[in-house]
Length: 280
Image (cartoon, rainbow, N blue to C red; front, top):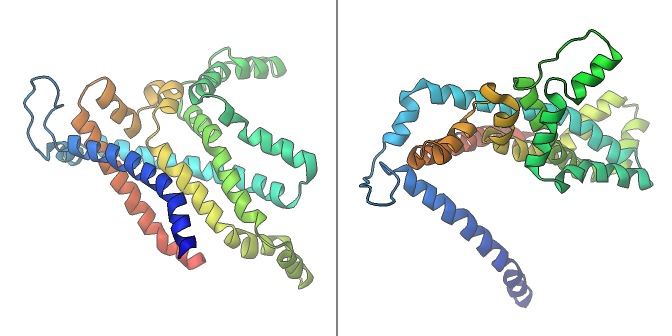
């Protein structure tokens, strides 16, 4: 009993802090989403469902929502394709100081501000930038690449920002797989592909799911990378929500769009939960 009370006293402050910092902002956003106007100054406000109705009345918002979900799925897929082999090599093949050095390179992007990283990509991708200059130096006559302010530039920036999450979550799952289990499979005649698809991938599924959730949800609502690297092609639901709060000053519509996006994300996660339980 005393041990239980001690554990509760240790975790209660953290959970209380998390509850307050999550519930209070969300409650304020929910309150604003049902208002007819921003309740400041002498503006008259009333309760309304018009902000939620606007999303269903105008196809523009639903198209942007689908475009944002497609972007989230593509960034997650690229991070998985690049991150899983890297995590597998780190967990099962690389040892010693080389492993420590590679880990340092993986977490190195977290040591700099996200805005600085994105502006660095603009220096690389812009016309006559580092990438275009280098390619034209090696292959004269290649001409302008035209990568800046395109959809691939947005993908590149987002994958760079979120790839470490996939590598780290997959590494934790793969590292926990007992090497004796893999050796037993080899001794019974299982090939590399069989071991990979029948043992490693299913056992690493918790890490894959955790990494996918950590990437998919924030990418849908991202606005810095699409705005700075995409230009006119960087209009997504995240940039529209940001505009409602900062440029248009229509906080109720921005709050309603945020809750609709959050609701759709929860529905998707609930839809995939039976699949995850099946593999467990």
